[in-house]
Image 1 (spheres, rainbow, N blue to C red):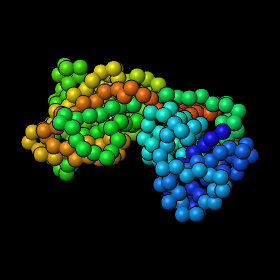
Image 2: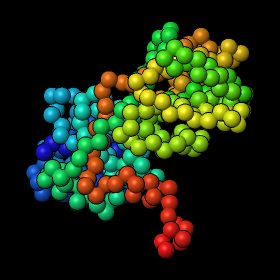
Image 3: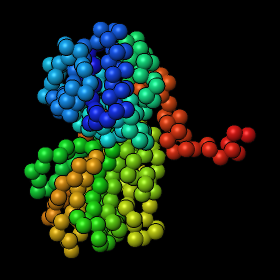
Image 4: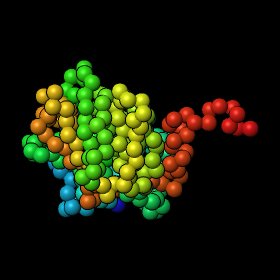
Length: 294
């Protein structure tokens, strides 16, 4: 069993639970990997076994079976971008805050490692978004999104208009602070905070959600992710933010944005105890009303 351990933080809590994970993996003689980036921020706070392999980039030659994240949903997103199209299953120990994606409780580390060893888990393939512009932009940020793509005016100070087409057909001119296109996985993230619906993660859809729409009749829309969305920007403003899973690139009103389904998927690993409805209730505090327990 080859396991890559990944985190973006080495705070006291994260260090404690990574050590627990290492000890559990030792029981099954797992081969451990860490990224060079994580090794640098670790700075020997965590003593990894001497045979741990440090890699600069995840590749097929590493033959990694699983990637275990420690952190919150941001860490899970970062890990997914590192894995890219390699199909390595990703799971997350929640040492962050909300944890829709990193949804394994800290106290369940031993159960998780046992599940990996016994292959007692299931894989949840998640559809993702491909983003590109015309003209092309030189950028170091990823060109695919697990959660969402958002478009806003650079300084967030003015009402803007965004003209959207679906499969070449005019959809709407959105007046407001911006526009979000999310995946079902991302439907519990930025889109939800702007009034978008929650969509089951295995659905094959895009969710188009306006940000602070000026027209109260304009509502979020769920469409097939076989669609191609084309976006034109307000010509009155020169600069805009194109945000892909929280990574932001500056673009101009000359850019046309294209959004479509990416050809590959990201594999999230879920234990048999994982249940999406349990996650929704726990994270969104559904059912706290005593009337629900009668």
